Image 1 (cartoon, helix red, strand yellow):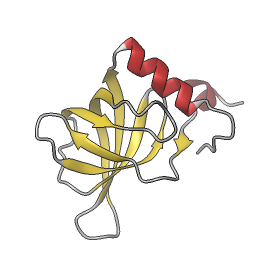
Image 2: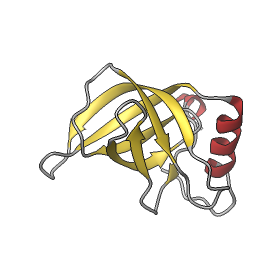
Image 3: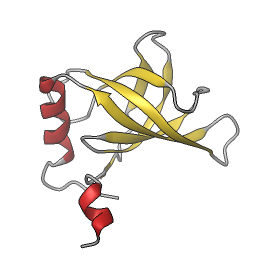
Length: 115
């Protein structure tokens, strides 16, 4: 295993459509491509700003139906081939203990597929 593998958390692929909304505006900003306990890849359909901080809410399939809220730092942004869309990488910077436990349980669930 390389040192890179030690630094990165496993990122679970999200096969279902999981929409992400901005807590402040209540607007849907995109859908999750993959997810780890420390961050996510988002296919953004709304304009986002590099190096900005966001507060997001999303609901993961197959768990108790509760929303998860995260504070996230936008690390990088890459325009997608579809007009008006971008691939965006986020690092989670704030998460309640309950939401972190729910998120980690979902990411590590048996049968998950990883990037």
